[in-house]
Length: 315
Image 1 (cartoon, rainbow, N blue to C red):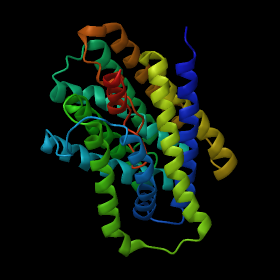
Image 2 (cartoon, rainbow, N blue to C red):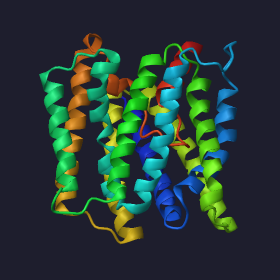
Image 3 (cartoon, helix red, strand yellow):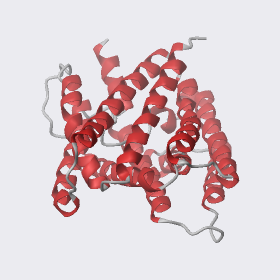
Image 4 (cartoon, helix red, strand yellow):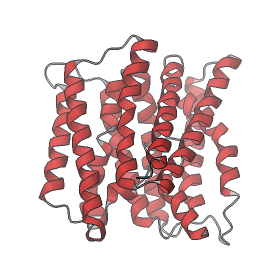
């Protein structure tokens, strides 16, 4: 068994978790609008350098403009909601909310991809969503805007991932990556005047660190999928709950309560089951979760599926 893929993935998700620690730290001081604006600004040079290697002779006009527009809107919503969730929720709870995204991808693949989801995956989705209910504890705990933001980020990310799966073979990687980044930059820039707080140099460096960490983790995740089986690499994302527990306890004085632990276990088990079920189905399934190869789509993260497709085309 080739262990390089899973090891690359574990390293990537450890760095993504560090990225989220910086987001949470700065989120206690600055609005998500301000964080996303500067993080996106710092990300442009990194992404541009990578895309300069794209030798295809074409323009940046999308082949499917309405789908690209819908994916761009979903990316903006995902970025803002995800950053806000990390700012106000305990890290472990934020991750549990976002772990619902693969379940929703499976659900959305039915109307958007024409995917046939059998009884096994359907039950796994229902059980996994039950895990979300366990974490939220409706009636026992007051639900906050942070919980709503986490669920919104998971849903919007699922929509964007399925759209990429639908149009990814027709659209250039540059289109799928630059349009959401440009939209984040423009939208957050327009709102920046309402929330701007002057930043010391150290905090500005933190904004840059968000971009660099997201970029490095994205590159490692691409390497993971190039060197390992998707069915083994994809579940590595759940290692983030361990980092969340560690960072939350050490840096933010957070503890993992029993309902969150139980709910996380249910969601993770359901997600892993869906991944392995899709892997076993092979050609009989469009495998929307396995082929939407990325973690939560943030303004600083690479879209893994389009990058892998471009790398395959260059061979």
